[in-house]
Each structure stands twice: as C-alpha cells, then as structure tokens.
Figure (cartoon, one colour):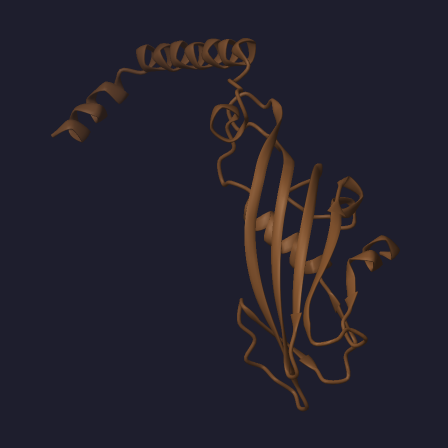
Length: 180
C-alpha cells in the first residue's frame, strides 16, 4: 500500500484558507483494492481544501474515463466520468460516533488527511448497475457479432424448450389451469 501514500494531504502545516491539490488516478490505484468494481481507468482529481480553525471543507472534482464491460455484448469500453463531491472534516477532542456521508470526524492530533479511500468510494459508487456500450460509451454500439451469437443461442433454447413440451402432454393440461 505504499502507492496510496501519495494520496495523503498534510494539512497541519497549511495556513488557513483555500489550497488546491491535483492527483492522478490510474490502474495502479485500482490494483490496490482487490474488490474494486473498476479495474482500469485514467482520472484526474482536483481537490480544493479550505482550512478553517476547527474544520476542513474539501471539494473533489473528478474527471476522466473508466473501463467498463458491457452487460449485453461483453465488449470493454471507456466510459466518461465527471462529478463533484464535498466533504467536511471536523476535529474533536474525544471519541465521536456520529459520522455521516458528508462529515468526517478526526481527532485533533491528526496532521494529514488520507483521501485514497474517499476517491475509491466516490468512483466506485458512480459505476452504473447496468453497463451498456450505447448508453455509457462515447459513440459506441454493441458488438453485432456477439449480439447475433446471443440471438442464435436464445432461439436454440426456445426450440429445445418447445420440443420438451411436445414430449410430455401432462404439461399442456397444467398450462390450461394456469390460464384460468
């Protein structure tokens, strides 16, 4: 996990005010997470950190592409990704159990903010449930050869299921009950 050390922001030495940081997110980043939905991608994270006396306001602007696999034709394609997230980091003296999605609580003794986990989470949440070349890709359509193979196999399954109905006439009587 030495690679992820570059995604730490040492905020204790910063003056109050806004500070900008830039991070590159590539395949090595995703390799650090074994169960990542994204395996390949090239993104840039522009992070603006606004330091105040008792808290930090962190804004993430992430832009780039991630590699997805089409759920229809199994073709891999680049999908554009662009979004903004905001996080508030609050400093406290004692233990705090009321974390929310937008507020992160750190002890006052911490001196750096590790954003690798946040970047990983923000990107993986944006992966669509159903990836399709024509919907998430840029000027792409599904692979025609693969679609024809899928259609041929589904027609063969329909034909084989039709033969099974002809073999056993008891099923025809049961289907009539279902239609009533």
